[in-house]
Length: 271
Image (cartoon, rainbow, N blue to C red; front, side, top):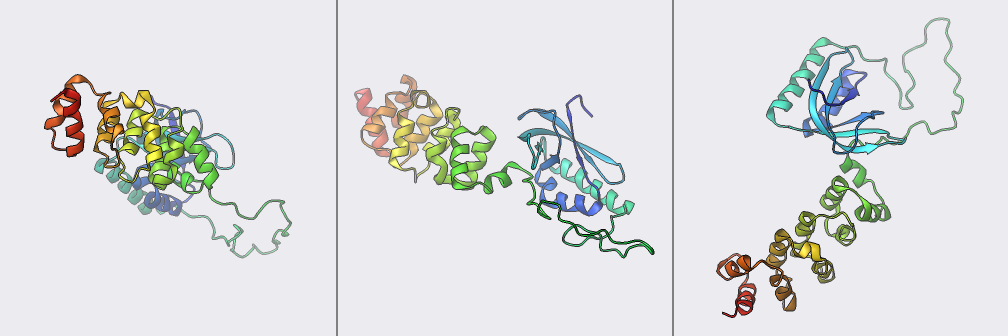
C-alpha cells in the first residue's frame, strides 16, 4: 500500500476483532501488541490481520510507544480517518463474519478450556505458576493510559511529557494539571494560549504565562490573555506593550475585546 513502516495488529478470533472494532477501530485508533520499529509521530501503515489471514491496510501515525512489558507495543491513530476508512473497516468486519472463521474452544474465567477432555486423557494438574491468573489489560491508547495514572504520575507526565501526552492530560483532567503543564519546558505557545484563554484560570497561573517572554511575544497568547476577563490592571498594559504597533493600532476598533482593554490600548497610543 505504501513504503511506510508496517505495524501489524493480529486477531486470533473473529469476536476479538468485533470487540476491537467497536471499542477502538471505528474511533480511529488501534494498538499493536508487541510491535516495534517506529518512533512516536512516525507515519506508518497499519495492517489489521484477521484469523483467516485476510488483511486490511490503513494509513496511520504512531502516537504512543510502549517499549517495555507489560503492555509493550505501538498505539496508532488512523490518518486520514473519515467515512471512507470507516466503511472499509465495516466491510472488512462483515467479510470476516461471513467467512465463519472458527473460534477457539470456550474457556473459563481463568483461561482454561471448559470443553470435556478426550477419552483416556487427564486434565493437567492445577499447579501454581508464581504469577496472578489474570493481569489487567494493557492500555490500548494514550487516553486509557492517562486515565489510569495516579495523581503523582499525572503531575510528572504533565511536567515532562510529550505533545500527545500533554494534550491527553489536559483533555482528561483540565484545570487540575494546568500548573504542571505550564512547568513543562516543551510547552508550545499554542498550548499556553489554550490555557491562557480559560475564564477560570487562577491568577497565579496567569502570572506564569505573563512571565514567559517567549509566550508573551506570540500573537495567539496575546489574544488569549486579552480576551480573558481575569486579566486586569497592569497586566493588561503588560500584554499590550508586547503587541506589534499595527496590532495595537487596530485593537481599539475591535469590538471583541472588553472596553477596559480597548481603553488601555488608546492610552498607550496617546489617543
